[in-house]
Image (cartoon, rainbow, N blue to C red; front, side, top):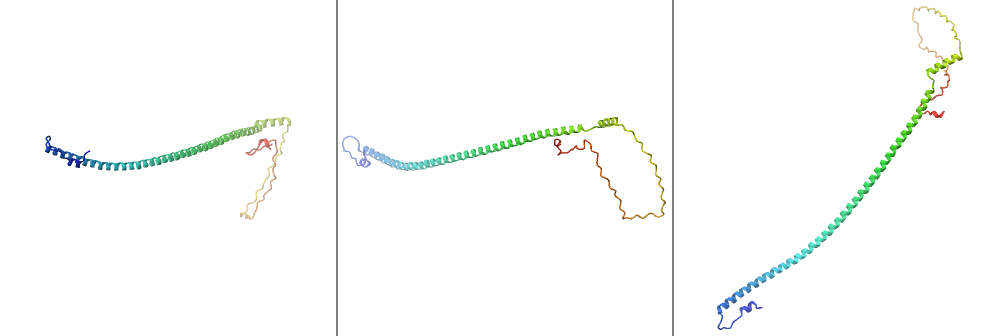
Amino acid sequence: MLTIDEIKDISFRKGRGYRGEDVDAFIDEVILTFEQMRKEKSDLIRKMDILATRVEQYRADEETVRNALLSSQRVADQCIKEANAKAAAIISDAEAKANNMVKESNAVTAKQKEAYLKLKNDSIQLRAELEALYNKHLKTINDLPTDAVLIRKQEELDRQYPTTPVEEPAVEEEIVEEAPKAEEAPVYDDSFEPVVHSVPDYAPEENRFSNLKFGDNYDVDAD
């Protein structure tokens, strides 16, 4: 391959043929073309160097970006993993608390139901006891005599043990003389104390119903 200097120094032997001026003009054009091509080559080489430098920078930046992306991906994966773990822990804890609340609620409900049923059972037993006590008192009341029974008993006693009515002696009316009127009103002593007469203790006549007892704490089956 010829260089520009070789083209400039080229010489041709003179003879019959091409014109010298045309050959020199062509050589000048060739030189200009080569110089332009060399300049463009230099520009291209410089641009290629710049591009190569930029490519290296881009490669370095790409590596940095790739590393950053990988690091970000690792951080993101770690964050997602930790978030999933925390979410799973929160969900598990919430489910455990919900299960405990359900168990406690069920236990309280069962206890309340048991207490309610016990109260109902106690009410049934109390009703039965009250009905039994009422029936016993009602039987005792039914055993008590009525006015008709008393009249029949009196008639029966009169038939079995007749009595003659006794006339009471006439009581003469006592004549009380009137006391003479005093001219002056009598003076009463303020120290006068009334005489209190003792009343003998009265013992009521016993009958077959005198031992009957009534009250809230009285048990009919105790006697």
